[in-house]
Amino acid sequence: MAELVASLSIATDLGLGLPEDHVLRQTLIATELGVRAGFTPEQRTSVFYVSLLAWVGCISDSHEMARSFGDDLRVRSQSYLVDKTGMEMMRFMLAQVMRGRPPLEGVAMVARALASGFSDATDSFVTHCQTTGDIADRLELSPRVRESLRQVFERWDGNGTPDGIGGLAIDPVVRVVQIADDAEVLHRQSGLDAAVEMLRDRRGTEFDPDLVDLLIEHAPTIFDELTHTDVCEMVTQVAKTLESPLTPMEFDSAMEVFGDYADLKSPWFTGHSRASARLAQAAASAAGLTEAQCRLVRNAALVCHLGRTGVSTGIWDKTGPLTTAEIERIRSVPYLTESILRRQPRLAELGSLAAMVHERVDGSGYPRGLSGAALPMTARILAVADWYQTMAEERPHRGAVPSEQRAAMLRQQVSEGRFDDAAARAVLTAAGHRVSRRTSAVAGLTDREIQVLALLVRGTPNKEIAERLHISRRTVGTHVEHIYAKIGVSTRGAAAMFAMRHGLVGAE
Image (cartoon, rainbow, N blue to C red; front, side, top):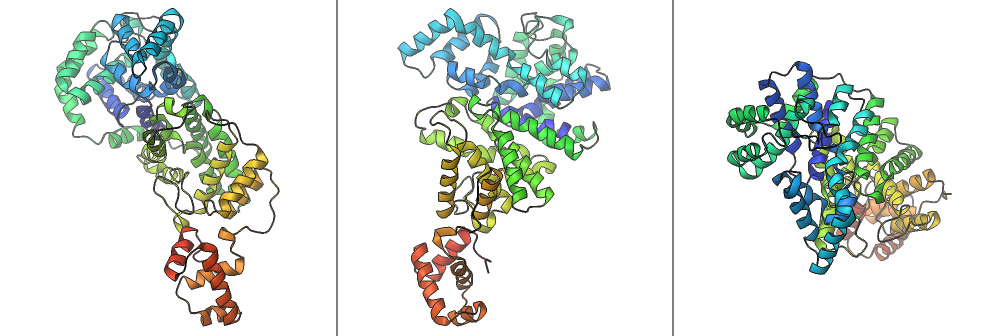
C-alpha cells in the first residue's frame, strides 16, 4: 500500500501544477525534520503517509476552481508563493480571477466574487483536501494517519481550517509536513536562500516557530542531500519496510480508488473509470482471455486516465472548440499516466497497457502511433471498451450517444481499420448487443483474401500460394487484384504496410 500511495502522489504533483517528485521530495524533507525533532518510530511512519496523502484530494474542487479562475493548475502552483490567509491571499485570488479575462468580464467576476462567491472560493481552496479522508479510509490506513490528515490546513496562528485549532494542538506530524511542503517548492524554484526567507516570513503565523528554526539550522545539509538522491528509490525503500505485500483483492480495491481519483478531475468523468473497467473485464472474458489477462485489462481501465490530473479542468470543461495547444495537452494524458505508474516496478506492466488506451490498430492513435502487432489483444479490448463507454456519457460539447448508434459507430470504425474486429465484437457482446457470427473484415476483405494477403506480403509466389491454399493460380491472381483494389495500393510493399498496420500478418 505504501508503494501505491507513493505512486498516487505523482498524480497529486500533476494536479497541483508542480513538477513530478514534489511530494516525494517533500516527504523526505519532512521525514528528516521529524528525525531531527526526535520523533518516535510511530510518528515517523505517520509522517510518511500523511506527507504522501496530504494533498491527494486537492483535485476534488478543480471544476469550481476552473470556473472561477480559468486554470486550476496555475492557481495551485502559484499559491505557494503567498501566505494563504489575510489580505495577501485576497489580492492573489482577485488577481487570478481577473487574469486572462477582458476587463469588463473580469470586473464583473470580481464583483460577484466579493458579493457572494469569494468566501466560498476561499474556503474551497483550503478545504478541498477533506476528500483525502475518504481516500485514506478506503485504503484502510491507520486512525492516527486519518486524524492527522484532517489538520493539514490548520495553522499555527489558529487561522486555518476546518476547526481553527492552532499551536501545539496541531499534530506535530502535520506541522513538519506543512513546513516541508512549502519549503520544497521554494527551494526548487528559487534556491536555498528563498526557502529560508519564506520560512522566516511565515514563522509563528503559518508554521511552528521551533520546527522552522530546526529546519533552517539544518537546511544546507537536508536540501543538499535531495540533489544527490533518487527520491523515488529512497521512498520505495522506506515503503518496503512498513508493510507486507497486498493480496490481489486488496490491490484491485486500491485500483478502484485510483480510478475514482482520476474521475474527480471533472464532473463529466464521474463514474467513467469503474464503468469502463466493468465493460473491459467482461469483454476480455468474452474474447477468451485468461483470468490474469482479464484482471489486467480491468485494472488498466481503472487507471488509464490518471494523467488527466495534469490537464487543467478548464480544458476538460470547455464547451467550444479546443485550440491546438489544448488538444496536444489532452494527447499527453496517456504519457502522463504511464509516467505516474512506471516509477514503481510492480506497476510498470499496468502502466504500459494503460498508456495504449488511445492507440488504434491502423496507427492513427496516440501517443506513440502504435499499430497492428504492436498492440496486444488486451490493449485492443481496452481501447474499444474505453471508447464505447466514453460515447455513452455526456460531455460538454455533445450529448450521450444512444446504444444502437454507438454500436453502429463502432462497427464503422472497425470497417475503417481503427479498431480490431474481435475486440469490438467482444465489447459489443459484453454490452448486451447481438453480434453476428460473421466477422466483418478490414476494408471489406474476405477471409480468403486475408489469407492470400498474409502470404503475398511475405513474398510468396502465386504458384506457392495456390498450392498452400488448395486453389488455382488464376484464382490467386483474381484475389490479388481484388485485394489491391480494396486496400488502395498497387505494390507488395504497400500491401505489407497495410497488413502490418491492421494486424493481419500471420493471419494464415
